[in-house]
Length: 116
Image (tube, rainbow, N blue to C red; front, side, top):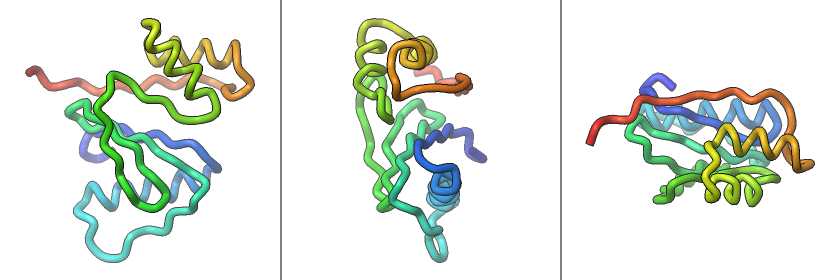
C-alpha cells in the first residue's frame, strides 16, 4: 500500500479489490463516501509497525495482539503449523500439500520492521 502497509484478502477477486479500495480509503483519512464492500471477503492489514488487524466486510477493523494470524479454509492448520515453529510461507506450502483448502502459487511479501 502507499503507506508501506501490506494487505491480503480472501474471497472472490472483485470483492477483494473492493476491500482493498476500502482499506486505502481508511489509510488516506476516510474522507467522503466509503467504497462499497461485498460481504464475501475478509482481509488482513499489516501496518509498517508490524501490528496487524482483521478487516471485516462491514468496515470494522479488529486489532490483534498475537504472534501470527491466518484466514481461510485452512486457518486452523496454518495456525497450528506456525505455533509449531513454521514460518508463514512454510505453513502455506504445507497447507497446499496437506489440505483441500489451499492451492496455487505462494507469493511472499515482507516489510522492514522498525527497531525498538
